[in-house]
Image (tube, rainbow, N blue to C red):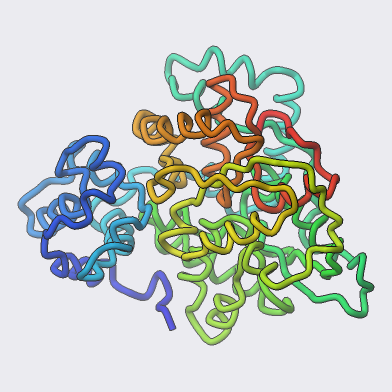
Length: 422
């Protein structure tokens, strides 16, 4: 059983920096080091900075923070480390103890924790997009907040909101008596960035005869807080999600690989949490061995570029499940993106906080998409989807970006082939 995120002393976690033998085998796999060739942007360099801070030989200054905050937490170094250095846990602990957050993000924290506030904000955003206010913000930005223009361009155009949590979607196609049950985790993006994926997943599962429940009290998975050095806030969200899903039946479906990875790692604080963590799954894994015949999928030729997010590949190890599902779809030609093992630069809030590096890491992937000339790009992470969509839009590319559920719904004929601005 894994410990609660608030139970291990972050200082004790930092003792694991001694596991690093500074061999450098991680360097070719670290996206930021590959980009800058700066030792401070490498895993062993960041561990050396942590050790310097702990020994009092370094101060928590802007230079140290730039190197540590620039880490993507992509997991590529951990996946190849012969000493099994838990770099992700070290990075979280460093941000909590050695370079603690200087801003608690009260507005963003409230949005993560309160569904009513998120729905209200989503409603305001939909109005702003319909009236053209977001386009104005995207052009003008702000002299005090020059990043506003970029942030506005990153936001996809929001479609209709999915059904509110708390209801049960009835089964169709196979009869309710024979239906299997699945609980849907929507997290903090289900009303906004992932709204189309939630609607698509409901359509797919109902057509397959699944009974879907959406627990009302669920909240953000906590990954953003955990990786920002706020383990206490992440632990609170984990406890709330354990309570929300305690009475649910069947697998817990998380459409976003980042949320799914965090739920698996940080839910198991007790026997109840361990049970919930073991039930967390993704759509591609859920549908393994399931007859897709009831979906009545279209079979016209479709070239699909496949992006595998870092959490899917390095943490969950489910990239094969994604490819297997795509290859089961009639008429689909799967085109894996070159260097899929390297981060696209999205990395949670990294694309907002480190836009220059995020765009630098995304650029070769956009070039690869243009070279492949696919009909659609599929990725299993909402942050990656937003990042890719904004980059493709900036290049005036018409390639739509979809999640696996959205692609299935499109092939069922219940989702338009080119969703607006996503």
